[in-house]
Amino acid sequence: MNSDRISESERVRREIRAGRISGTSRGLAPGFVQCNLAILPKAYAFDFLLYCERNSRACPVLEVTEPGDPVPRRLAPAADLRTDCARYAVFIDGLRQPDRTDIAELWRDDLVAFLIGSGITFDDALERAGVPTDRDRWVLRTTQPTEPAGPFRGDLIVTMRYLTPAQAITATQITARFPQNHGAPIHIGDPAAIGADLDEPLFGGPVPPLPDHLIPVFWACGVTPQSAAENAKLPLFIAHAPAHSFVTDLPADRLMV
Amino acid sequence: MNSDRISESERVRREIRAGRISGTSRGLAPGFVQCNLAILPKAYAFDFLLYCERNSRACPVLEVTEPGDPVPRRLAPAADLRTDCARYAVFIDGLRQPDRTDIAELWRDDLVAFLIGSGITFDDALERAGVPTDRDRWVLRTTQPTEPAGPFRGDLIVTMRYLTPAQAITATQITARFPQNHGAPIHIGDPAAIGADLDEPLFGGPVPPLPDHLIPVFWACGVTPQSAAENAKLPLFIAHAPAHSFVTDLPADRLMV
Image 1: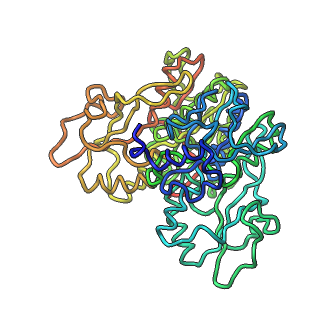
Image 2 (image 1 turned 30 degrees about the vertical axis):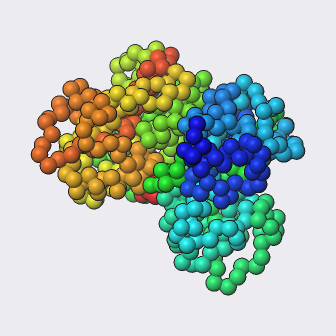
Image 3 (image 1 turned 135 degrees about the vertical axis):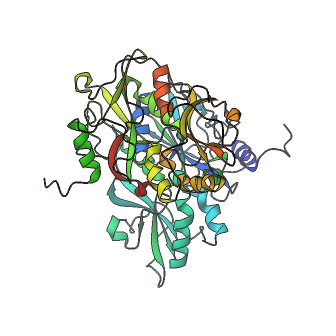
């Protein structure tokens, strides 16, 4: 294959596979859909797919692989899900193990991979519209329960951004056009109204006091299904490590409505 | 309950349950989401949900009930799926049985009901925008394969409308805002390009020659999953009878993006 002809998404995955990219996927291959990964045994696949369907704002499923097949044939047919994420989070009986840079040794014939649209996908569209995405952004637990399915349950996890009112309106318009990547905000304003935990953010560092003239805007976050799968204490569950999403070949604008 | 206070959707379902409405659901409770039904044994539920996910333009799943529970708790918590469709199509080993006006005798503890967004839902939005929906409309087989899952497979079935160019543009804009009810058209123009079978329409009567100045516009149709389930020749499969969709309590505009 002529390397001049490959897409930026494939180039990024090759760098990751070769170990030359090991950090966050944020900002990589802008304009291509990025996906959160959830990999689990077939025995739990129906309940997990149902959980995603029932909580589709947090868990927009874009592809489900056949059992044992590590290739996401619709979104990145040249990729291998065992090696093409920069960092994987592994859970055994609900307990987090050391992160891995590949999961080839853990792969089994009964594993099913779910590719779930990530909010990282619309960062590029937000930037193009003048909404900054690289700062004033946190991932927070809330006290809003999701709708359970089988063993999968837990509270909604959100991404919060501090935006100006004008940015909040623009960001609502833009993200609403990506219903398969979390879509429009689920809340604007008071964090306490959804029980957002500002004291212990999951990512993004300490949350500073709200600056004057800014407004908190909240989106359903793809960490939600990962958290629900942790709560289910499956014998084996593998996810992308936070902020290390899987880069697909699908142009984000193809998902736009 | 004070009958003055019930929604138009609940009033319609009560009339259906009492046998006082027996015809098509088209035009009933305008503004409320209508759903296609697919009811099948739990043993096939994962593959069917996966089929729907893989072909979500044709099969937008809005709710999946718990096994044995005939109540769609999210979309119509006062309804009973065994009685509240005006007409049911029943298939045993893939063979269509006589239609029924209720399925109480067929109900089993392992049946799971899928409520799938119907194109009838956006008829009201189209009418409000000046696009007529009650004529020049057919359901057609095509030669476009859907993506299979387990035993579920078959060609895409479409709804075709003859519209003026201006109506085609308006209808594309409006339906694109309902991605959970088939969304934007999948094709415009030459029926042969997607192998649409004009000779044997499934519904709508004979297809007349295309009038001057009109253009055929095609949407993925909710008959697709029903056809795939027929092809799977399940021991038991129950659907709404064509054009007799289930009326939910969800305002259609709530699904709009």
